[in-house]
Length: 333
Length: 281
Image 1: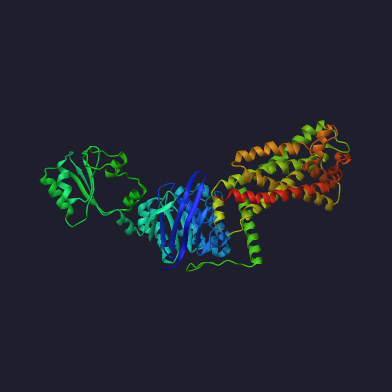
Image 2: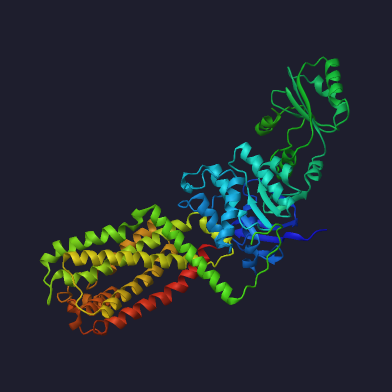
């Protein structure tokens, strides 16, 4: 087991009546990426602000690079790079001046800061804009410059709060590859994200946070296993109860059905030839099928299952009433 | 400083190294503020355009109606105009600081291994530099309208030194206001509600003879009056307040210095406390 570069135990934080953190535990081993996943208001940003010495916890303990964030914030700051959720750079300086200022305020020598800033401007494709004032930058450019600023001193630990929010897909992939490259060099990264594919793609381990605590943790594969396997989704030409009777032997749990009765979903065990059999039994039952697919579990499923974003109230049968909440309808279509 | 492989950086630099680092941080923050001014030169309006306007306005409009014992109104008013402009322009500090605190850049600074106080100290140094610009503008406009210092170089310089010390103290006062104010408007209204009365209820622009006793008591102990009287004395300009019996008007130099030191002694620790409170959650 490698040493943890980021470690938090039982962090709590209350803002007025809002319990932002309610005993949060996190751990990121050296040279790994920990993805912190959760809906808005789950406490991700608060946790990050505590770990980066911007906020004090009400209780609990956290260490970054082996230093206590409350007792030794100066030592923590020497070892971290931070990209916050909102832009944190100087509007009236150019992109280049911003990077140089961050480098110099981090005790880099000016010559080193120059070399490093040019390198990062190239990495984030900002060289052409480097001489322009930040206030003329687009949102995506600011985001990339913020990321570059957090990497100026090559800190061993990076905190990235929703690093790719507001980036176009190309920039997003680019940022991903930069982050992977840093981790290959041994950097430890803690990133929060709302994009499940981002966590899936990047993170070695994921902590799902809701209501200020970690409600599930593990590798992306482990988390996907939590949803209990694959699901079948089918669209019928017309609603037909015969479809359910025919599919019953093939599925492993209750059906979910849309209001018009044409879209249905059920958990299945993914086996060879499953779709072929689904088509055959429905054909034999005289049901016309428009679309059918077996979905492997994604982190979206995990996320929604764990954070309760999908209610599981609309089950058919027992009472034969095919009802469905509107948001579930969305998901199925 | 650029490591090929990131390793954990230990702390514990020696005291001289830390002091040198802190000074460098202050230099970097000051330079940043000066770059801001270069980008938005209108920020300097209150120390360039305003002093010229005030000088012309007071010397030619008010001055022609206000008799000054022992000299011309221009000779009398220059020190007062300097203080008026230095005092009111410190409002810019409060506003600028509030604006700064409401942008994300402070969060960035706070995650860097820099001397946290450099943000505030850098600002106070920038303020002294802009106060110097203000002083130069006033001196040039004063020379144009007929003001002349009548004493030796040492005394003239001492007068400017006392005025700039007071400007430095005001910068910390304005810093506290900027840290306390939630938004730029609050900081701005502080300027109108506090700094304008303080600079006008003084001996800066009118002789105080005709004032009722209760008002003259306030005026005589107003720090703006003390600094103005000190400058007038040191520059050999007409200083009608010198006949006032208040200790502060009999010893304006010491009063001016004492006021400045007192303001700094209160506002500097207060500013660092407010800064910590404002930036901790």
